[in-house]
Amino acid sequence: MISMTGYAYTEKTYEKAVISVEIKSVNSRFLDLTINLPSFLNPLESFFRNNISEKITRGKVDVYIKVKELQSSNVVVADVNAAVSYMEAIKKVSEACGYGKEIPLSLVVSQPGVLNVTSSFDVEMYKDLIKPVFDESLSKYISDCEREGRNLSEDLLKKLSKLDECAECFAKWQPEMENHFKEMILSKFNEILGDQVDENRVMTETAALVVKYTINEEIVRLKSHLKAMRQEMSENPYPGKKLDFLCQEINREINTIGSKNQSAEVGAMVITAKDSIENIREQAKNLA
Image 1 (cartoon, helix red, strand yellow):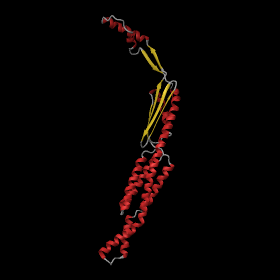
Image 2: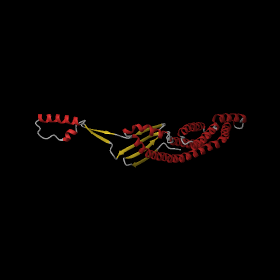
Image 3: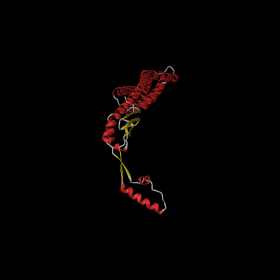
Image 4: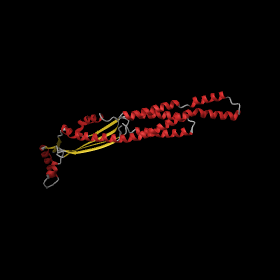
């Protein structure tokens, strides 16, 4: 099983740049993937998105790819005509204002359009630099999710074992229910009629209560759901959605058993079972 919560960070220094890739995620019903790239690498977004989507099925995943250039790719181009025009205009203003000092060159070159900076990026070259860093970070991230998944699995199995105990308690109580009802009805009849109790009437009343309060079907379905949950956890690497559905079904059976319950012992087990299934349901939300 794989958790939807994970984190990884990888950084590598090349001759031309320092590349870092950070991946982190939290729970989400579906895959909500955000790729954060330097603007000049936007053409590569779909490439990295597809790489992640092939290996991650659920979760809100944020990927940060950062590039720090060690060798500048900027090209500076001077617009001489613009510089001359600025110089002439500034001189006119200077003479009109009686400014007798020499006009500094820094004032001219700082004017808009005099020096134009352009950047030339080789996107494919950066793709080749980023790919191994990205792959390593993704591998670390998946390993982190798997580690957390193993921890969740251990906890879920403990809760599942507690539910098995509750199911066995319900099944153990079920055969005793008829005797319990028979003794209860016989006691009431004896209290009212004394020795003139009609055994057939007692059996009829007992049967009616057994039909009304029997939990045999609920126990069968409960055990079936618990078996399906174990199978899902052992065979499906992404059981999150199915476990959530099974938790709903199990909770429904436990509620029905609780509503029919006539025993303090079963009542205590119902509370334990509801607590266990709620814990499983919360933990299942963390699974992919």
